[in-house]
Image 1 (cartoon, rainbow, N blue to C red):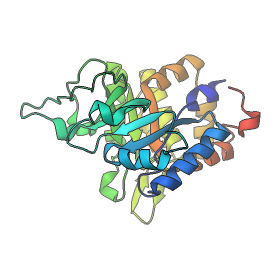
Image 2 (cartoon, rainbow, N blue to C red):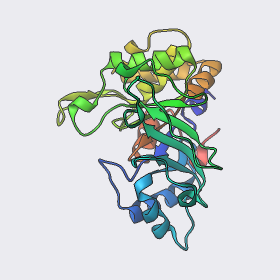
Image 3 (cartoon, one colour):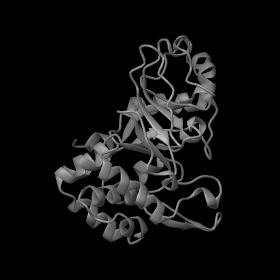
Length: 270
């Protein structure tokens, strides 16, 4: 089923981050509830800043740590191995600007011994091309709390096309609150849709320009395109687009259900 391939394991739990910015206790409670429900669109991976690992441990005492963890490096360096002891860290997301050398190279810090997590370096489209260590992916910010935090469709499209051409897996974050591109009057800018993003990656892996799909606001056309994606294209697209972080884990599911692109968990066929 193409829809299952396109959306399986798409959404990371970014409940700690704005605009939701849940307290650690509430974020973990929601995460455990999502784990119990087990909807396949969610990765069931909990994103946590490195600076908040002590709070994560304190709130998890006696009830178990998150099974899967995405570590967001907001500290000068990667945490030492002892800070990661007992944590199942799957992903490490690193701000590229913090580790850029005067020569324009990004020197990703060495991982602590024993840490096998995939690493992703956050860059802007304007920063490409960038030299990365072998096996390292990229990360793109698709929005934020102000209008200037949202990259234009051409910039985002250039990033996607670069990753497709170079075979570089990537993660996305911020701004992807709903499935379909729409205008946000409060910010005075267009918000990218996560469905647009997924379909744009499909276009890119087939050698097409991803920008027109990123700009598309016709809901019916987007749904038609999603249902028409060949299985092979869907698999290649999701090998490229690893996941995206969402501060809400319910909104993506509600949107996909409303569009008829996923079913409630008890009816899911994956």
